Length: 94
Image 1 (cartoon, rainbow, N blue to C red):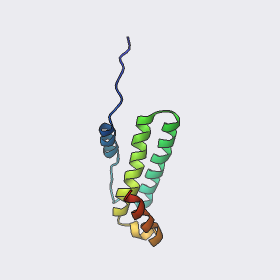
Image 2: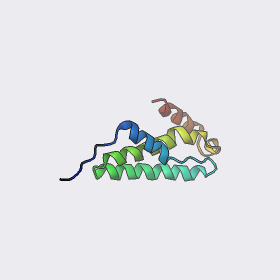
Image 3: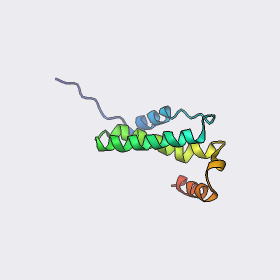
């Protein structure tokens, strides 16, 4: 008889997501854009493979980096235009 495990709860997945985002603003802005992009790509791959828990975590990582962390990066104003920053503020309130 095989032992089955229960799916992770949303709060467990959210905690794992936060743990995996090891934010360091000393790393370059472009580094974090690439990390977020890779997390989004990995999320899509996991979704296609029906690994919904991992997809949740990867999409969560991308969202946290793009919507919460990047706006606090020292180079945020340098790399984004006024229009891009305005759009980021709009989506971060959703």
